[in-house]
Length: 116
Image (tube, rainbow, N blue to C red; front, side, top):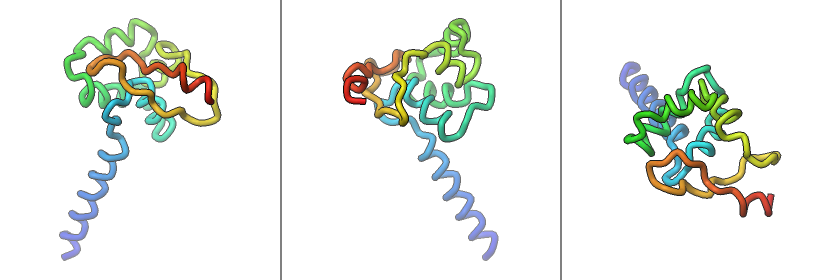
């Protein structure tokens, strides 16, 4: 019986992990990376970028290569070097939505900047 409970708990933890790290339906790469790096940190790899790509832009087979060429050798460097224009606020802004499905172009936060 204890084994059954352990299996159930393990399955619940795995489901919770998937839920917490799932990209929003229209969440752009920049906003997803900001959310994940703030919550879980950067491990020196493209862990969150790959998660986003696999869920939101599976056809973007050269995404990691392109981000690396632009100075994004890991998730936090993508934020610092590829998407440096995020407005300075005390909290994360809600994502304005992926402009084009399957694209890594960040959302437009111009309206958000005026109200932040």
